[in-house]
Length: 336
DNA sequence: CAATCGTGGGG
DNA sequence: TCCCCAAGATT
Image (cartoon, rainbow, N blue to C red):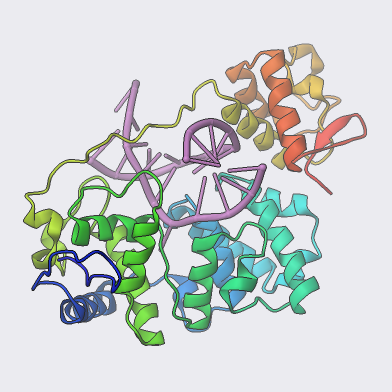
């Protein structure tokens, strides 16, 4: 299907399959599908706090649901409210972030908790304008929290929604590499008028993208709106571009990750010498040595990477600059 | 605006 | 095995 023309637009061809009526059909179809198919995720439960929703949204940035679940449970058990996390050191947030990846998110979530305490008396704000002022909260997360935690009518656009719209409405296999203004307009046009309906629609389209209209092998046979799908109607044309993959092996990122893995487990500052090729005579391998115990495994992993001194220095200085690591007592540790 | 920033599971 | 990519944000 296509979309109702914007009033001022230079007169796109009128499409009988488009318009509010068609949109209403999609709303109903996806709403039904969502009700019977949606996953039972803890941050969707009615009892979940806005804080719980915020934490989930940040953790879910570029990280799959299954990996987030256990960490989210642990965070909410330990820190049921923003003030609880705000009392902790930033390093504790980074440590308990575990291996979710992109650990700066942990730092920002901690900073967001502090900001919520300072600026909002400890209560997560409910409107987009205030949410987006929080560290680590961008346009997607602000809209998602306002919608899912506060029932507001927001134009939520994440990678799932972008892909569903690209196929269902635009007829393309994949959305453009970067979010465009046209996509935002489209998403706004498709949004149901009422608050409750809009929230359900946002969640349903997202869920459809996650479970059915997936990037790799879409399960079109299970799709509740396949008969309205422009991509299917067009014969499922292939993507017009190939996404460029991110390099990993041998990169600074890999070294940063390995260094941070060591520091997460360390109970005392780790001398930089230990991060460099550790001679066995430093006493780390077999027994307890002069250094902190319990970090031998991630340390071995780091050594296996064998970053050059310059790369290690680059990685460490990056971590220092980001505030993920600090110097203390002649070594490195997570920020206290 | 393009580059940067982790991690692990599935195709 | 290798490659793709998952509820993005920031500079």
